[in-house]
Length: 113
Length: 123
Image 1 (cartoon, rainbow over the protein chains, first blue to last red):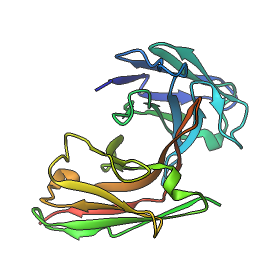
Image 2 (cartoon, chains in turn orange, purple; image 1 turned 180 degrees about the vertical axis):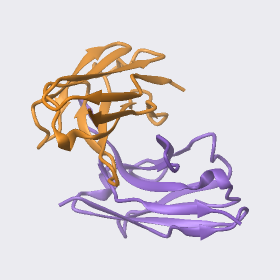
Image 3 (cartoon, rainbow over the protein chains, first blue to last red; image 1 turned 60 degrees about the vertical axis):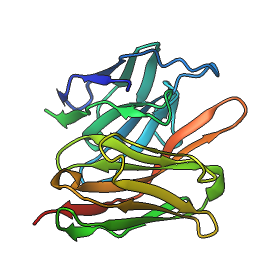
């Protein structure tokens, strides 16, 4: 299976400051259809995960534009330009290129300093 | 509005069996592959099982292969997870997830999650 490795696993950020999470895959996530199926999910405390970003850089409807995704091949990044209190939670990357053997990263916990 | 409503969780002894259900609404159910994802207490996300839109193809993670069976009834817009020979390590919140739909040019993956149902395996 494709191993997804996130870093850091924990992030403490001052309100209004940026945050960045890295996600690396053990194999390229470029699909034969020309797409790269790398999603980012947010899980707020006590809630179900919610898809934030799909296909590397596409924001889900309703997701604030302070969230952005980038990357290609095996290296991907989720950035929050200015962290707000509602951004507290755990963020997961997931590859779906090798469906049905989709795999998740370990998760990155974001808290406010 | 797209909704996924899981049910069937509970407390079960090791070695026991349980069937989870996921009732879907708000989208054309038989156009989507569906997925079960679990989350053990304080841990990350693990894809457990996937079933194709028609139900003809299934996938189970190695950790549950031979013990869990995913199925669906498209006439009822419902997906199931039959769990048997349950182990303590199967204790988790089980999420029903709208898994995958592919057009001619692209696929959409894991865009809607249910609220989850809790399975606790303990003696």
